[in-house]
Amino acid sequence: MVKPIPDGFHSVTPHLAIDGAAAAIDFYKKAFGAVELGRMPAQDGKRLMHAMIRIGDSVIMLADAFPEYGGRDPKALGGTPVTVHLYVPDSDKVFAQAVAAGATVAMPIADMFWGDRYGQVTDPFGHRWAIATKKKDMTPEAMAAAAKAAMAAMAKPGKK
Image (cartoon, rainbow, N blue to C red; front, side, top):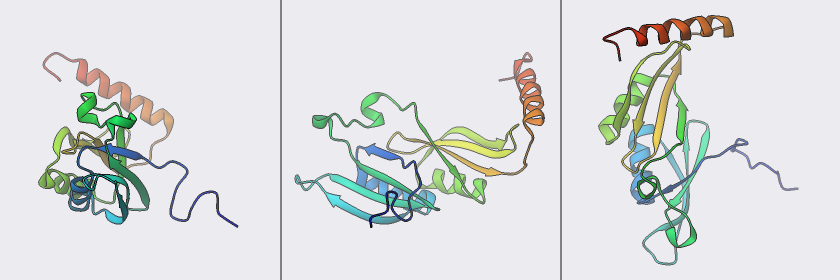
């Protein structure tokens, strides 16, 4: 009997369209310690029709952009509204590793009011990644109070 959800997969699996999927696999290996699980070249011999990597315990599917079939990447779209959230044991280390591999800082890493050490990078292919480590468990009430204090501090003159 075939399992409806294959071993090693979760219910939700990101599938990224990338201009330069083979290069992106190399980047994800350097930036996030990705392990390549496989790739299927397209018939044109230049692009990848499908590939899979594993980061931590999660699989990510990716392929080159195929605009002729409606598949466009973030650069073709002028950016992305999606952020891939990555929980890791040491967010500072992975954040620095991603930047060293070629990602650009979208949001510097810092301690956040919701209890995470958190920052965001944009990879060289236009995808945004949040990198986080849970530092403190918080009740909904404590998080609401911390959010209120953080927003009040940001609203003060001279603060950004």
